[in-house]
Image 1 (cartoon, one colour):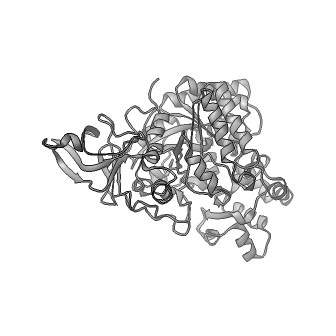
Image 2 (cartoon, one colour; image 1 turned 45 degrees about the vertical axis):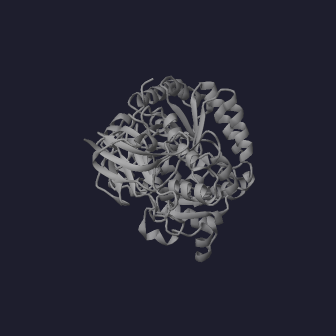
Image 3 (tube, rainbow, N blue to C red; image 1 turned 120 degrees about the horizontal axis):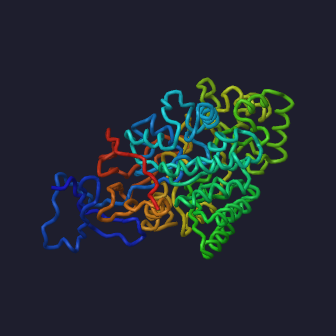
Length: 536
């Protein structure tokens, strides 16, 4: 007998097609039969070792988080309910050009320090890998959900060039090409960049184009956090479309939104730009999270010149009064490139996490609020936080626009991504709430997307971008990475006040045919593995 039959489910299969009622039979980690209600009339229904009554529940493919920052969280926390409880069965890691492979001993220490605000310092992790393949092998020991990986361009540049603001030499470019190719051959699905983060932002377009040509030859995709989401955002999008076209490389735009006051209501301009490129034959997709605030590290707001040389040099500059004043002027008057060319409004910058518990009193307050309580200028507070916490603070940046969020999520190449940072005392609620928030708020409450459309955005469409031949759809022969949810009650529990609250209305989640969430509770199953790039 088969392992499991899910009875009387309303199947939303991930293709965008209308739902249908069926029994779905699972055996050895795959869907082996789908018996539609009409076909079952008068016939003996399929049997299995276990039966699950899904009356009133939707059965869908497991959700694919196209932009995740769980690179260490998957290793640190086997429970990983932040994602599993949302119905996520696959996350794409290595985002924004900074992660932990490929590295050497020097680069690993630098990267750990640079993105401590995303993932913590990693002191509780055994970094027993250096290459992309070794990192994927580490994931294969058993994780809560599946994970794919993007080669992080900033990390590659740090390994080869360092943290200096200069063009790569021809020899250095050759080595970066080799490292990108090696990472793809070892299973990475593409290349990411963080072009407002050091050292990735120091790469000129010609350098990025050469790396994208390597990605294209291996059948991967380029996923840039491009050079601006504020002033010059539309120009930055156009730059990435042109770059990917020149490299003949598939393009996936990371957290593709338009922020800050200069971009209020400008989503139609972005969508027109993308439609023109798509109609001309470009291969483009994008992801967004269904919230208005952004999330990053406080140090990321600094101008590029202040970050040159890496974390140690940043701290040295911050400690020098004269240099710190130059940084303040760029942030508050000129508009630093790290802050997307827009002068910072400290009342929009909320501290969401710190690495030193002694600084916990700053969490949940904006920099302006904390500076007022301390009787000092906002920059004095921000500077002291960066120095005392070793560049560790994470922030929410309240600079988004709801009309842009809604317009972009309707687009024909849209997919879902949480951009979820799990580190910090008060993280962005998107880390725990993105997928149920799509289904509960934007589908059921607002009707921005139909249920079938939304599920396709979160499953079939991202699986196609990742070139996964047997995931993302409810089909016979496909892997049984599945979620069952109640469309009448599914909702995000996470809020800005209580961001670690789990969702409601998602009683069951299966990875490889095994329950990781059962009756609303996390099991001890670690069925997730690294999902490697499919050969061309």
